[in-house]
Image 1 (cartoon, rainbow, N blue to C red):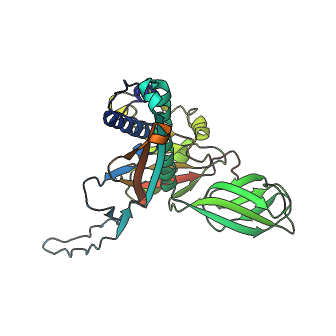
Image 2: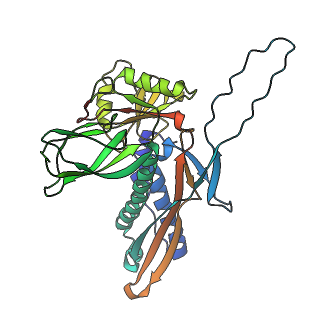
Image 3: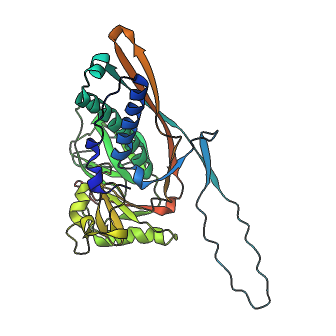
Length: 360
């Protein structure tokens, strides 16, 4: 795993001497885009990755988490009756397929417009990284999107949603007014507070809610503290799982960095050195990863090897087509992935950490 300093040099490694052989150039294009996509992803270091390259299948079957087999007292000379273990399984398949294209004129290749070409390749690579991160973080949060229509209330009305915990509000409107103002939200209880009076109208809201079962409500609304970290940790620990990483929004990082028990990643060496992209330090034995991919009202503690699996089949696939009418070459990139939770007890979330969070 690259260090933060090494990752910061990502933009330097694309410079290339363009060959006259388009086949060789195709290889360079493919390698450059895939490298950018891999190194730019924030989420890939937070999940277990299974590669099906070379296997004649597009799915994998994994066992679900099992309850501990607790031993019984046995007197000397007595026998033990073995427990029957019936493993519950789930299939994870390559359910997503993404594609993007990139065209290069023959003039650009002949004239070695390296910076222009590099910029285009980086754009494609970062686009794939963004798509992958959206998929991974929605999986890590176990999010599902819902839309509801709820009878309107007066000004500052509190609406209870059908699903909780709430992770993010996507849109909130009414019958005949512009988007309404969400002035407060209770992620833990799945409620929102609307500024405008919607009496005689309807609230139309689209939001995402989580299927996480281990949930910690923050001690103090809008603030992440040390007790929240340890409280969420022991939700998993009680299930004999051991979270090692906490993923949070930059807003929550502002709370944690003030704690005397926070250790900066730049103070770490050896086993304490950063191992995950965007890792900025440690607290309560947890490596801290900060990203805007995490909603500001939520933080997630997890064991990155046991909670969620990303399935892929090799790297990207590239196709090339010559376009005589424009004297150019078109490159098409494709990627297939899938993913799912493999152990729900290896992750726990902390709610009500956002600027609008409140106990409603």
